[in-house]
Image 1: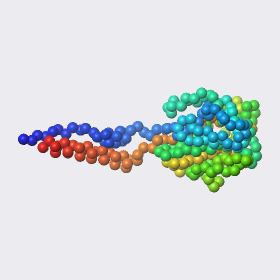
Image 2 (image 1 turned 180 degrees about the vertical axis):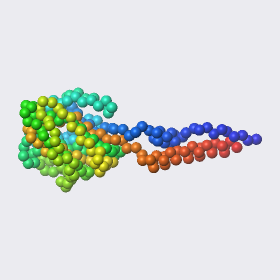
Image 3 (image 1 turned 60 degrees about the vertical axis):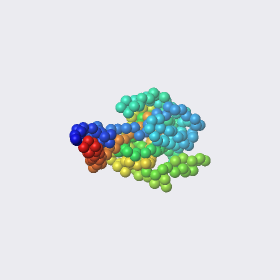
Image 4 (image 1 turned 120 degrees about the horizontal axis):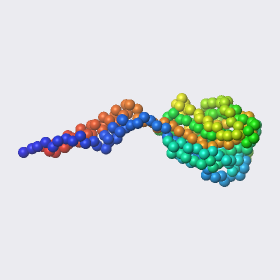
Length: 256
């Protein structure tokens, strides 16, 4: 005597994952790295380099050259609830003199990974002189995909692009920042596809012009979380379906 056990449409864990991925919500923005500079400072004024680890996410920021302020200055509170960021005013990284000529020009590098991310954006808050008279009128932006090099500078070492090579993104980017308040600046790098899915990306901000002092706070790098391409989704779903069918056939055979 034999009987047939009904095949229930029970999904394997892999098939469930495939379906969830297939019908997942659209790609979303996520934090790659964020710095609020509220973790204190332990370096003397005019240090040629101050290294800041990311407060959220993973990345390193190198504050360099110029006349760095080893204590920082008053910062700006920042909140991005959708990204899980809510920070007090605290401190901001600062330079007391960015108007020096030649190699003394203030700059900062951010080094991070974009593996799994596209459509990169960088935003920060910027404030100029405390007297409100002079304004920062422009800045430059460059990038590279190689780890930074250590180079000799005024009796110590600072970071620079490997071999001095870089690619310009913005030259003389207009901005209007004085000492009365912070302004928010966002740089959309969605069109720079070369920096997507890279284990190492380095971006440098420099040549802040027409100002003596400067403070920068709440540097935030975000990206769109990558999801599998349609071909990959199809393969995942097909694989899950085959596993369901195979499992069902085994049950029928055992019931004969």
